[in-house]
Image 1: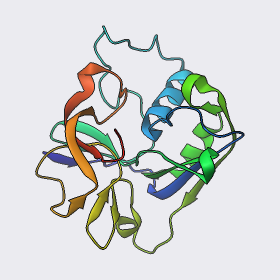
Image 2: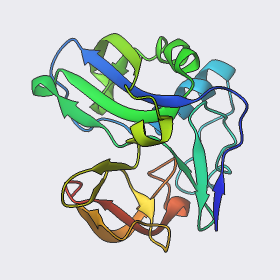
Image 3: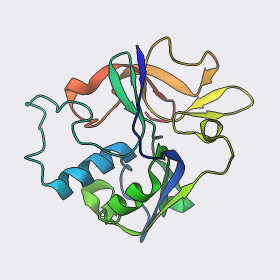
Length: 193
């Protein structure tokens, strides 16, 4: 069953960019996972989960990115990371509260394996367009051949019939992405693996 997020805070389609001091080493994180970690640290939540303990309930740590429930799975409206500018920047597309994201990302100073890549600057800008629904590129990017998948999603009837650029697998669709409790039948962008 698909369900909608009914938050009262204004959420708009956004481009989020991390400008790095040096080219990225390793993989860039999913934006929702990065924000859950930032909020957890700021609010001093208990010890983070490990693989042997149950995953925390989805949404336990509130972040200001819109989400939907797809087939019982909590999925944020945030794309996977795209590495650009020769590895010196990472971009994500999201539907969220711009002010909140700008504030939370101030505390994130590094990305990459071992957090060795310093973030020189964060940019959070609205995507152009008069129609927020049409400007949303967090899950799909429209192309002449169909809608290109932008992030892992649960596999199911809610996927558009013209979906392209994906493969089916078992994968997590919400943070913590590494936890085995999060795995489900999913579609993931074809360039991921």
